[in-house]
Image 1 (cartoon, protein in one colour):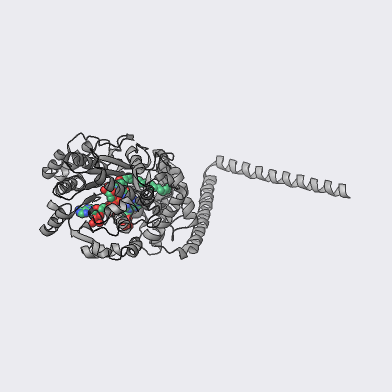
Image 2 (cartoon, protein in one colour):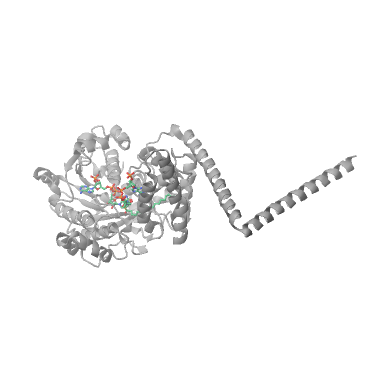
Length: 523
Ligand SMILES: CCCCCCCCCCCCCCCCCCCCCC(=O)SCCNC(=O)CCNC(=O)[C@H](O)C(C)(C)COP(=O)(O)OP(=O)(O)OC[C@H]1O[C@@H](n2cnc3c(N)ncnc32)[C@H](O)[C@@H]1OP(=O)(O)O
Ligand SMILES: NC(=O)C1=CN([C@@H]2O[C@H](COP(=O)(O)OP(=O)(O)OC[C@H]3O[C@@H](n4cnc5c(N)ncnc54)[C@H](OP(=O)(O)O)[C@@H]3O)[C@@H](O)[C@H]2O)C=CC1
């Protein structure tokens, strides 16, 4: 029997960000492994015209939850959505709901955040810092609380190259930042943002770092731990391989590569691609919840959920495997044949952007106009390259994360728990994982049927022929223009033609000689 699963039985758990990528997988695993847990409270806001109930219904009826329903048929009764907006004072939770949360919660998993790299500092501080502070305040009023687990990111200190499992101080106190956001207007905040974030690439990593300091400063007597995942990718094993439901991190780029929109990228090929499967992060998080509640470590422990130091894979290997997979299992209606060139300096990046991205987009839009349709490729390319520019920082640096606490925790688990809540990334086979990831992107994000693969392959062949035809035509046109305008080009042309002619004549003459000699010997 798993000790961890038994620990969560009969527990009331509060999850923020349960409708997000990580939150859904966390809920799924908790229900599946501890079907006797009492209740999971989730803080949800109405969104996209959907009520809370509709949002929960959609999650529970998704493919991700199919296995849960077999193990825990009354899962609908055990999930309790609470209307909340983490941007509001007291999260805009009703008095009755707040009372219930305060008196019943045993474990808190705080996953909610804005993960946008371009979020305005005010918005990022509100959700990633102020909301964390408020949640800790709430937690301090929960008499039955056993553990508070905060999800941060391994990149919160990405301004350092070696990162330990400790909280690093921020030059400006989080409380001062929170206060200043209340009275500074947007334009002033925009002006001071670069100074505040310093050598971090965006407001996301900066505010996640502030959030950690808040956890350290405001946790009081609570049992608190922080989990820091690196780049979270599709599921590795559970509940099935390759599940993913948003475009963040690598998923969007896998689509862009597989569909042939993105053919080159500025990246350091040998830099470590520190991906971590979402189910690995979730298993670690659940184990951390158990350990923090049962062993009550004296200080706040930080756990790195990273792969680089135990089982590294670099961007080059990853790119190759993505390409190999989309060749075997192509995406439908590709724009161009998939390719993955890594550029390492600004000049080659600009060159390949022009040749591989802008030029085909302009030509395609021209074709759309000619055929009376609305041009759209240039707009799409603009957005894609904007996204790439935001992610570039992370594919051109390498970091080393120490994982002592994570390894210590692994050694504390019983063999059964190590199996049920496996977060040992050394067992991960990257080639297999990436293949399943690409397949998952095709099935769960693009919603493409595998029956369409032969047609997609045919489409790629057609694209290859168009590519050859286009290149040959382009070569002939350029050559023709050159010959018409330059004596030197004409001379080179005549030299090449006469050289080829002489070579062919020599080859013919020598083979005729050989044949004659052969006839003479036999005759
Ligand atoms: C050619 C060779 C290729 C080789 C092949 C190799 C393949 C594998 C290589 C893998 C390399 C991986 C590198 C990952 C590094 C991640 C590091 C994370 C580190 C930190 C991790 C964390 O701790 S935290 C989680 C990460 N946090 C995000 O990752 C949010 C990012 N994101 C945004 O910050 C906003 O998205 C942003 C961009 C501002 C736009 O903002 P925006 O307002 O302009 O636009 P929207 O967000 O509304 O999206 C507008 C349209 O872009 C579409 N789209 C959105 N994201 C997209 C995306 N990633 N790739 C494509 N397309 C995307 C979307 O689907 C919309 O399309 P549509 O309009 O058709 O619906
Ligand atoms: N994905 C990744 O690569 C990584 C993620 N992380 C961390 O993991 C955690 C989860 O990330 P992930 O699941 O990917 O992110 P998602 O963007 O998928 O999910 C974010 C969650 O936060 C909720 N949320 C946002 N704003 C509010 C609000 N005002 N009120 C209530 N809820 C809100 C969202 O709710 P709604 O559905 O209503 O928008 C959603 O449930 C974050 O803390 C992130 O920093 C760390 C490293 C990498």
